[in-house]
Length: 486
Ligand code: NAI
Image (cartoon, rainbow, N blue to C red; front, side, top):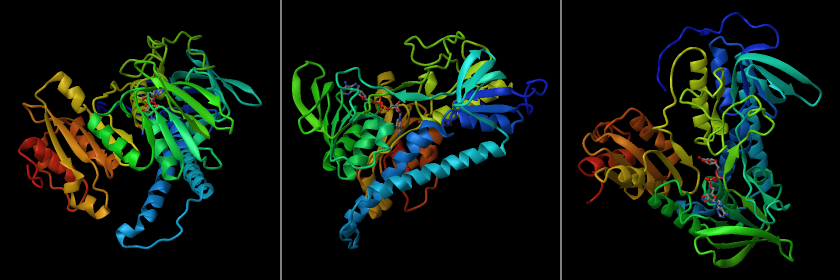
């Protein structure tokens, strides 16, 4: 995003009357609510239309509740392994109801925080379902009434919804999506997860660590297909150790109900179509991707253009749609479905609405995956970089050589930095191991600002800390890591 200050309030003209706004935003997730606060903070009269609670999928049904449960699994695992750390613990058990209640409290606290931020910034929150009537009018429908509001600019930020495979049995009662998985009242004995992508693998670890027998069926030859194979392999091995059974190159084809009431999932070899042995589970979690949420929104009725595959509202780099005063941000654009991307797109949309020209820059988008160990990546992967140029340099450093990781008892994984051959500029980095999702911040800064490996290597990193592994990987990309023999 380019930095370039504007006059407060931009060129929005005279103050609107009742029911009239400078900016109306449909959808209060991390895209919509951040845009609302940012716009209101600069003097715009902003309405935020939300049918549920502000916070969206990320806060109420995604990132936050899953991370609260991941924390429960970390505590449980540490307690189970207490003896490794010279402690004794007996009869360690999971109290699933309490873990879910804690998760709900964390979510409720954050929702309250967002609500109070919106109120403090003077954002008008309209609780209801929004539908675009024309390029400046939105119908807001609540249980009791329907009202029309008008706005000079509209931002569509309605997010996405889980997809279900169009296979036999996919609509059965025990076939759940990630939202339903977060609402379970009891732990199932067993679960089959269809899809070994980000959602599938995060839930696989959560449930397996809580004692559920988990089987993952993934269509591609690799779980977490978007990341480099060496990172994916590290998590694959750890998943096997955690008792997660994984079938890759396997296509789920139908779901039936077994005699014992369990769901039986049939699947076949993805390439040859050869039938593979069936697997069963008390619940089947469908984690095969998400699609932009456009239903009932009036998008096509007002003439907004969609992406070529009809998935997502077409936007340019300023987040403007095919209609000049209408913008779209977040998952509904069908681009990178990440909360932090949505928030940044929201800032870009507001800046452009308020007259500050800036564009969305996707070169340094961090990705954080909360498996065990965690994975994080930013910029180019090694595979992508090597496809473009064989000469890229790769600096690697294992956590096994990092003092802090050893004290934590978490020395699995490594840091990898990719640099341009001539300049030494860091163009990508990935981390698998302890604290990976926090550590990626430093690499993101380096990629965003085109820092060189030498600049990172010459930066003093506190000892003993995990970021020293990034420092060492920078040295590895230059003349060789200091704490590595070869
Ligand atoms: P995904 O696209 O990451 O993974 C879906 C997986 O299902 C793919 O690997 C695909 O090959 C597999 N699949 C599809 N059809 C199949 C079949 N018939 N049989 C077996 N496997 C099949 O989608 P996912 O995990 O549902 O996530 C949705 C979105 O949410 C993603 O865009 C993701 O980036 C985002 N997200 C990101 C998180 C993070 O960054 N920590 C956390 C949760 C979601």
